[in-house]
Length: 114
Image (tube, rainbow, N blue to C red; front, side, top):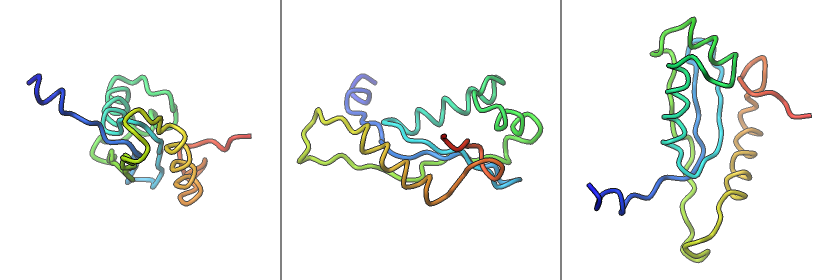
């Protein structure tokens, strides 16, 4: 088990939660996308998700109406070195997906930033 843990490298990239009943989505970027998706799913199950509209839809619908997916993967660049901070790269990738999908209220779960 320790060997598996030590050799584990989380996948960086863009995650997305899709509501297949109304077409709304919530997306974001993270250095460990599957862990972030698991956290969102747990919060929804516990009734404590920070995006109230998503939580309301979750409560009113069936969990089968939602999918939790890795939308895009950011591969580490060996030329950048082992300790390179990918947070800015992830923000840029997230901005591209937000621009492409436009998941803002009322058709998505995001709010436009002022």
